[in-house]
Length: 581
Ligand code: O2Y
Ligand code: MN
Image (cartoon, rainbow, N blue to C red; front, side, top):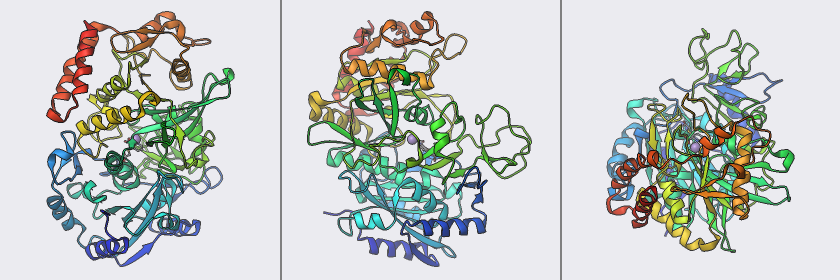
């Protein structure tokens, strides 16, 4: 029984509501991309960057009131409020549609309505899915061309006229008072209005690939997760695959594209995905992952040839930059790109930069084709995906949480994911640096009741049985008493991956602690590292007295779910309480 409307009928219905001057069906060709670029150069949406150093690259500024995802304006609109759960904003589908129809009504007068068919996932992959985004933003179309497999090939991939997730987007008057990002999972439908930026407007990404997909995944028995996928090649030439869930802008892109400090020892890292993983159980009973995206929508600030040379190499051609600064040489720039600020820049709003404050917006972005990444895995386009050996949950925590620990079982791992907490960053609007609970790094992205989502994880574990990947928790951000990082991070994180790999092989030593298995200081390869033994002990330390202070926050979080929280989560909570003594 299809839930979507017949595609042509839905497009007509959207046109009747939004009343565009014309309708354009995107075919995804390079000529079409050039046509859109020319239009945007003409109307000032795009600024062409230095053709010698950044060929086919463009800079765009968003409205200053529209620079990030808006979680407080993001809704899950299910018939029953309980199905959205306590972590989502909810409105009934009828009420939400009534509010939004008023904004959509005639919003595309004088504009073109682009119909953008796209595939999430490698073409021909059984796990891939088709979406169709209707938008009045040429900027969105251009970004979708990089981020997805877009155009005629998507129409060709549809099994029938109902086989797509629908997304209606309009920038409308870009008014924060009339801005809504609404999901109707029961209808496989997304409505977004009033924003032209990132996750609010590129509907294939957070709206489809996480919120709607997580709903579909539970219905259909797979997983849609906010996870990077990396390939770890080991000295014996074998490849293992690891997914990792880390909250926004906490080193996720850097980990996905890491240049391993242990390359000489034979530990090499390649990228399969930097943000989202769709995982399903293969015919052999193992968990497989595909990256549904075709590009990177990466945070620019902090990215430089030292922190992430692979991202820098990826973005030097055929890329779009949003809200970065512009140098005299007509090149993009952002805080942390170079130590010295170049003279004579324009800031992220196109004004002469005075030297005060940020030149680029803290949430400025690059959109780059994944295929341009020098470390892209040869498995990136594999329709089968890659078999997952380990799942990592991560966080940015200055205290308590050790560099790495191994969960005691799948069920304990689900508890570790469910109780993740991290210090907030600039990717979402709101306070920065505050600790917030972010289960599975999915808090803003679970498209249904999070209690049911935890249950779905438990169910998947039961299906996987002894073929389930091992689960670990990582934290690169622990500090000493003076607030200095205890671990060098970046390429040296390969040392942690090495321990994880050796644990999977049953080779590395670990110490059992109340929270899980932590490397013994000697089990971690620190050869050639400029850190003291005391530092290593500190970064691995698990202090039971301090950990007890984590319990009330976990309990308070779990209490929110009432009877939708699986009993197994309370069992794990009590077991932790007991182990802490
Ligand atoms: O601020 C936005 O609209 C983008 S947020 C984003 C972009 C790429 C990857 N991840 C995220 C995120 O917030 O998790
Ligand atoms: Mn993300």
